Structure formats: C-alpha cells, structure tokens
Image (tube, rainbow, N blue to C red):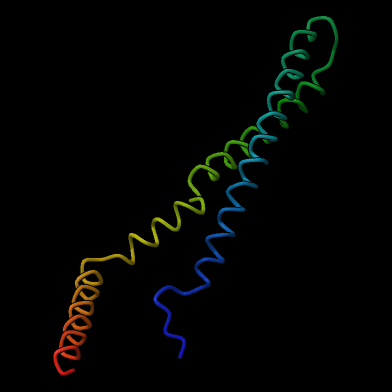
Length: 123
C-alpha cells in the first residue's frame, strides 16, 4: 500500500547531489589553487632557464600545471551545473505541480465540500 506521490528515494539522491556539489566545489578550488602555485613555479623556472639548465623541472611543472588546472576547471564546472538541494526540490515541485494535478485537487476539494453540505442538510 505504498502509493507515493513522490518516491522517498528521490530525497536521498537530492541530498547526495548536494553533497557532491559541495565536494566538487571544494576540490575544484583546491586544484585551481595548486595549479596557480605550479604555474608560478613553471614561470620561475622559465625565467631561470637562461642561467641554469632546468628544462627537466620546467617540463614537470608544465605537465602538473595543466593536469591540475584541467581537473580543477572540470570540478568547478561540475559544481556549478550539479543542482543543489534547493534547486532539486524546486524542480521536483515544478514537475509534480501540473495543471492536471491542480485541477484534480480542486475537484476533490469541491467534492468534499459538497459532501459536507449534503451531510449538514440531512441533519
């Protein structure tokens, strides 16, 4: 006899999406900060290249700057486009609150009021 209008599992997944959005935002920010730090190291090594032979370090800094930058960007974009808890609930309400459901609810209320009026008249 579980005839839910909205499945309770949906609220669980909405909560998971909210947590995932937060985690992606945090890690995206951390990776962006790491990328900025690595880019500074890369630039420093590029400036020192005319005095020292450090192409190996420049290569490492370049590789990890790109990897962390792309990872951070992907995570930040994902945190923007993953809906939060409030947005998910609003979308669920918008999906559930259709004209048919509202008209059905109004008709049910009218039937209940008519029943109460008939019951009062018979008393």
